[in-house]
Image 1 (cartoon, rainbow, N blue to C red):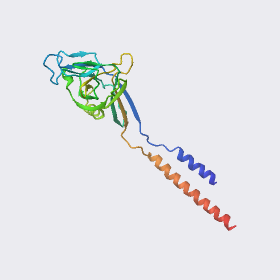
Image 2: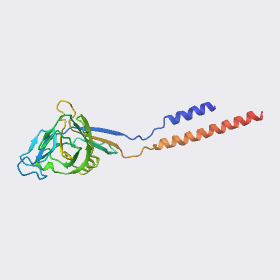
Image 3: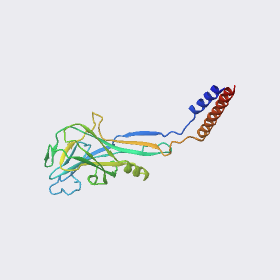
Image 4: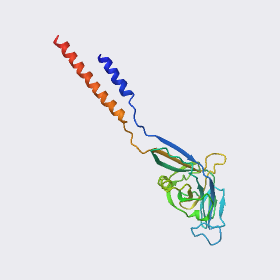
Length: 241
């Protein structure tokens, strides 16, 4: 009898359902990439993008030189983002790949910047010179001084959460050098390592037992107590004999 009750207790506890936290992962490729330069026109190195220095389709060299600078921009369309019910955006990462190429221009040659910064702004899927200075700096990533290929991940979680909350669908990102130097990014045409926006969602609820599970746990406790009492009575009877 005791063995039967014990088996019943183990069975009940093993089948108790619980509310489990779920997660979904989304990967977005840019709908448009482009380069914007500052200082390409004589006397206009002023921190503002130049009208005649917008290059649609580019996504390669990030340069901060002595007489000019350029950014590499990418914009994404999140209209297809479907967040599961009772979930929220938990993390968003803007990812780019740095190539080992020797890079120079605008008064700098074969010097790597110590890091890259990413700016976030609301885009329109159109290359504009204003996108050079648009938005605010979201994150900075260090760059290896060695000429190696490396993947850089920028935390853009709060920015994406706000974009989605405001009903906007086109986040844009502009990468610029943190200090003097030049570097080449992978456009991803053949490698698949181009710029990406990675979004992860998570449940808004804490993992807790469902009501039926709570009842099951109480049942397990009751049966366990019953088994102990029966075992104690059995031992007492056996001892008196």
